[in-house]
Image 1 (cartoon, rainbow over the protein chains, first blue to last red):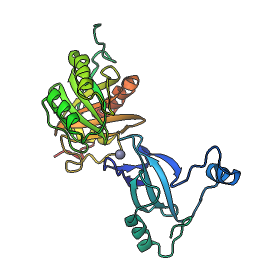
Image 2 (image 1 turned 45 degrees about the vertical axis):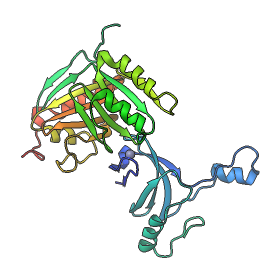
Image 3 (image 1 turned 120 degrees about the vertical axis):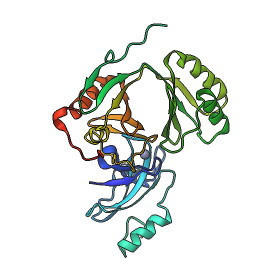
Length: 109
Length: 190
Ligand SMILES: [Zn+2]
């Protein structure tokens, strides 16, 4: 069972209180963008075995969207952080590096 | 003003805990910048209660202030006073990015009483109801079985549970099943 600490209301929220929102830190490419960018925005997703960054919503709770970093293989949680950011905070990256040396995810490492 | 009608007409059940439909309760949804002084003043003056901290439930009788999220409060007032209270809050927050709405008839409320309270609640929600994890005066929004719910403990043997009106019957049946005298657990007691 996955459990994240919601960065907004602070509770330990288990998976059943949450709604999964897919991959985190996507850049939206809308009307006027190139076909390649638009396609990547709509369809191209990471599906890693290991470190992954996702969006989750505390739907049965405070209602807020947040970000989380976890391992898809072991369900180990590296941390959760607020949605108002385009990249993971350093403290989260440091935790991942200490637990999964040499990890990569998109352009992060 | 028409007479308020409780979702279940004041349903009650006696089991491991006493389950009683409460209300009618005046409720005002307030969204805005909770750190704003004008907002805090409007809320505290209206209710006569201090601003709750994160997940706080400041409640006295039929008045209260529940912390729902970083930008939302549920303000409790006596049912008949809700329209006036809404107008008063809206007036105080004029010009601010805020939302004030009278949602008194949107939810159902239940009062649970009894020494087996924490055991009964723990059967229904993915929440640690141990005394130190869930003290009195803390509001927890969660789910009870399959529906969204909010709960706070008034004291060690009294809890207030609320859910949307449309699932009031489901919630009452859940609470009754969890409070069935044949389903004694005895984990949290003592
Ligand atoms: Zn939350």
